[in-house]
Amino acid sequence: MSSISLSTDGCAVVAIDLQPSFLKGIEEAGRVVRRSRFVLQAATLLGVPIIGTVQNVERMGPTDPLVTDLLPNPIAKMSFSCWGAAKFREEAASIGARQFVLVGIETHICVGLTAMDLLREGYEVAVCPDAVSAGSIDRHKLGMERLRDAGAVPIHSETVAYEWMKSAEHTAFRDVLKAVKELR
Image 1 (spheres, rainbow, N blue to C red):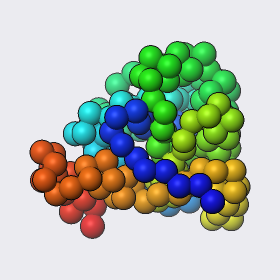
Image 2: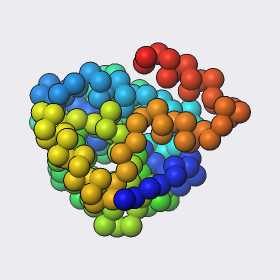
Image 3: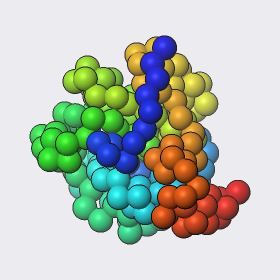
């Protein structure tokens, strides 16, 4: 079983395909967007780089308005795995991340294939089960099982933020805590 310790140094968040056209068919889509937004807010407050993607943007449309302010320039892609997009690989390399936290949709397709590729490339991968989903609970559950078996670590979105901060003495603690309380 894999285990990682998240750090703001060398970590990045990948927000995958949070587009309204896809979200319409996603189980608990509202939860996915809210929890993804929380991870993006925490990353922003803590200086963790964010890479956003949109799938087939010309046909499927832009990022959901609830996260657009935190994903100003998502990378357009046609590949299901983010790793299949040259611009994504370039951005990942320029950030210098060794760890990636994944949020978005769908667990068993774009999120899953991205995680598998990142793992094959030697990165540590955490997936927030509360900030990802699929068209049905069984697809989500099977996707998460496969990812865990492959070495990705399931981690709740709140845990990500607290693990990044390490202590209540962190300068951004009160701001992150406010975001936590807004979601409860």
